[in-house]
Length: 211
View (tube, rainbow, N blue to C red):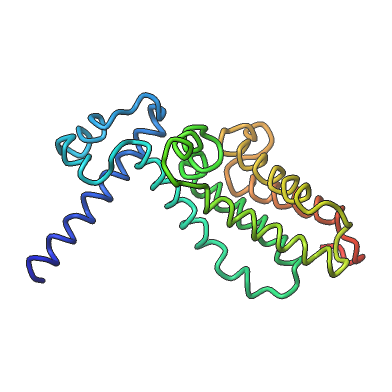
């Protein structure tokens, strides 16, 4: 490995260290209580070094946010090979639940904390593209179900919000330990949540083929 390659590798390692340390501090102390200096202290670099990679903690937060959506996309790669949109819709819900239970810190950052949305508002020419794309895929699948008379017809935007709210609510309760009185551990929680998802989709099913 030549000198340029070693330098590039070192840059990537430092960048990753900054992001990992930031995630740890954001989760443990809250975004508002974390400073660039705290991040630098945790990785034992100077604040100046951190500023070479990110202009402020909003930019760090945004990058972590995007990393979460990339990680989430890894759970859904096989979805788009499923031709039956109703089956695809059910799998979308299952994978969303699985991602949330297996990545609670990222889920918290992506869908619960207010800070990422405030960071987006404060960043120039920055939109919630990853979130919009994920919601767009859900709407497309719902529209396909409606067009094929597989689910009860309705306003697709409203239906998408309703389904997202259902799985989001269940994941949020689970990762904040609100299911402790009902189930033991994430495995039992996932089973219960998937049953709830099946019940909901069966209520929408207009084909007569209950899942």
